[in-house]
Image (cartoon, rainbow, N blue to C red; front, side, top):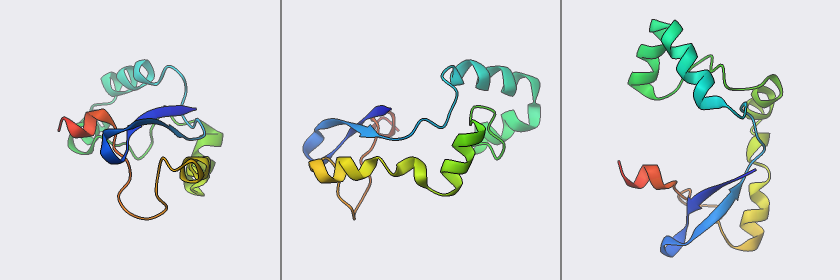
Amino acid sequence: YGHKRIGRGGRIFSCLKFRTMVPDGERVLAAYLAANPEANAEWIATRKLKNDPRVTRVGAVLRKLSLDELPQILNILQGDMSLVGPRPVVRDELEI
């Protein structure tokens, strides 16, 4: 799938990745955090979870081997991204 990132010069492009999370991830996360106070505290502190319920089994393997980022080679070949240097950001990161 592709998610929007902001590249050099403010140009928006679709950054390619293999999907590693369930499609309704926001709902799954909200329910999990509501039922698990420890996980909620971890999420508030780091915006990450060690045992994220949104990640699929195949997705966990892809992430562990860093294969979820492999499609970004196409972005590099198209000139949307560079092989070295800072990663393109998502709009939410600019607002922080």
